[in-house]
Length: 293
Image (cartoon, rainbow, N blue to C red):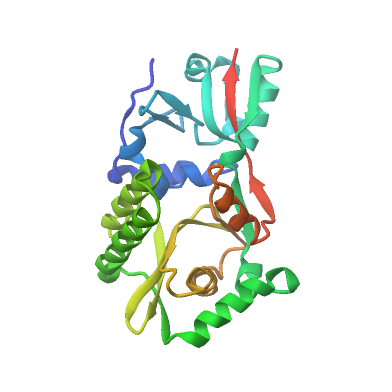
């Protein structure tokens, strides 16, 4: 029987979370807030079948993502949904290896480097120890010394202020650069997530204020038992060190129960790659494009 795909729904986020919890390796793409935020841009659909969750994007082209669930329980060579789809993207390394073993020579794997997740040690990003983090410490201390600041957890009652700051941030970036479809798409995804924050049970976040006004915020989610994922992090660059401040302060307050933080991919942007590498990742969440047959 063909998979019955349907648009994503907030009503099934608990069911989705249960399946995600049984998945051996979860990359940032599959966190619920991520698929919800980008659902309209990519035309994302899902299908629940056989204890797995199947995801596909319908815009700009039809593309299948990796199925989530207990991968070891399946005889993949007998799974018509896989063999008929044939081409998949954003496949976590663990599943890519499972499929490589199952299909022997009948599979091609291509490393999707631009989509690899950057994973860091939470204690390191809180303490910023040693020479390798010296510049980060200096930027953080500059922000603390130069401003009358306050850190707070993000709550539904401050979401409107965060939305206002995000609108300002988007306008600043549009003024600095020519119109960017990618930036516009990200702004839409952020706005969609923030507008539904009271219904997205998975979310957490933090804000930094200077003299009562929000100048930085972050939105995050529990990705696995030991890993937190940062979905969005924005700061007003008129306050030097604001990015370093929201990064360190959020993890100091909300990251105590996690060993690692996933800060998502760089999408091949040179400046973003340099910035992410400067925080010294402990590992990458590797992903692959997969073609069967």
